Image (cartoon, rainbow, N blue to C red; front, side, top):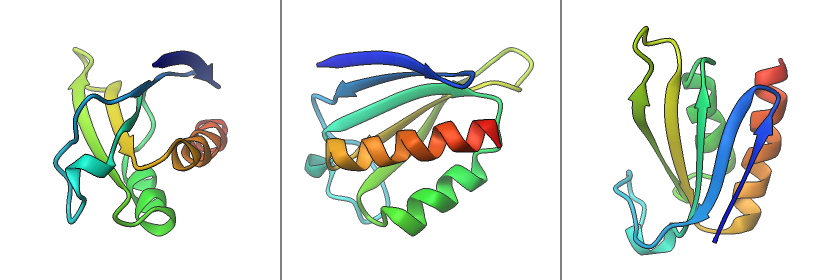
Length: 97
């Protein structure tokens, strides 16, 4: 299942992941819900928010960069659609910041 949209300049795509993903102390099989997005924002605050609000229930991967290394393609996997929705709300606020 996939959906897509845009959060204040951050294009994202939600999907159900067919398999898990490597992450620190995260059971790969529990991370079935993905969110892919492109951003030029700093990644560290995103990682900090995830660690603070969803410890052990997510995995973040930088999948690519633009030619000038400003924009990043990011994928975050979540254990539930609720966690993914909370992250979308944070992401929308963060990029408006």
